[in-house]
Image (cartoon, rainbow, N blue to C red):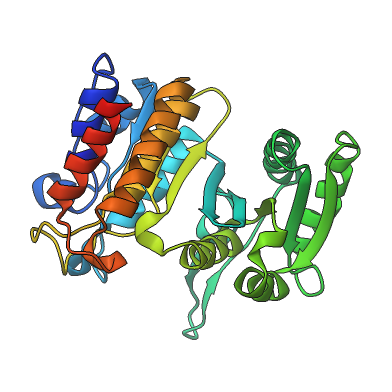
Length: 312
């Protein structure tokens, strides 16, 4: 986040930045992973740029950082999670439904010790996500792949039916269906075949991490979570990596690419977004961090990005 703020100061100094507690640090200081003042600041912002928030000390705690993340997504109704993956011939976007499914369904423990998590979807939830995917596909390569498990799950059968109902409004987009297990195999073996992939919450969570691995690793992967009218949430896909915290070797690419998505999708500044993406690509080649086989520190990488921006 410090690198992102530095780069924004160079690239878009008129963007007003406001820092708020969230996640593990918020729990330590307030007992709440998403304090009310943080939620209110997010609601009133034009965009939310979010750093990784977790820590292993809270993995089995009653109050966990991830609870605040799920609450924020639901409160802002950012139902469409865009996860682009680009590398060489690979250029795809996974559009993951973000506020429904298993992560938000009823859950609990029965008297006999059985535990359960419920996956539920309303047709309207599927429709709005599908339309977001079709609009994106129309602006890109004109192909949409809908991923489900319709041979087993009732929710997936609903998913497939609604996607094809929406497809009638997008005759210029080629649509195909793919079962999620096959989609995982195809992503690993022939990812260049995909353009836009739409899928439900848990499938999208898993497949987007696989896509990130195919294009350089989680450290490089950005995301944008968008709704209809309110502020979006822009964040790297990776976690907080406490094992390397404070060592100055973290790769800030995922955060910087998320910042570029924020500039483009959240603030309507595509020129600055393109400039930042180009500067990051330059730094990746010239100043790789240890996770990419180089020796650059986080600060070195930040310097390289800023230098590239100043030369542009």
